Amino acid sequence: MPTFATFLASHMGSRARSTSSGSMDRVNKYEYLLVLQGYFAPSGWEDLTAVEKKGSGFDRDANREIKADLKAYRENDPRAYRVINRKTLRS
Image (cartoon, rainbow, N blue to C red; front, side, top):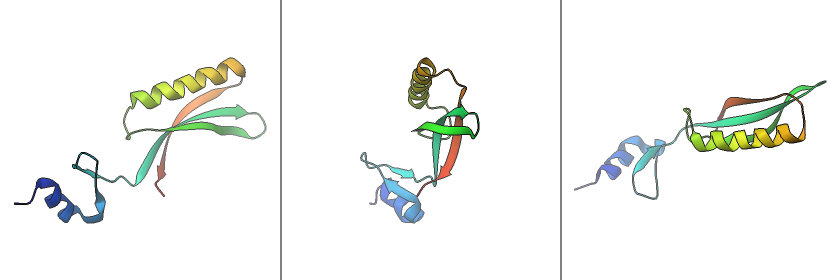
């Protein structure tokens, strides 16, 4: 008798991938990022660093990491900073 994972893989084809635990996860074609940007007067907002989120919703670990980066940048340079969400296609 086939397991649920093999059944799911046969019906989802290339849209499913196996994880180390053996369960099947759907592959998302997007990558969700938290991006820290700094304002540089003549050219505007530029990316300084980015952290990959686990999904499109709230990710506590990514949020903590980007806030730590923001704090470090603010301590060293008194310019304007912002954190944005970015959705890009995976390559």
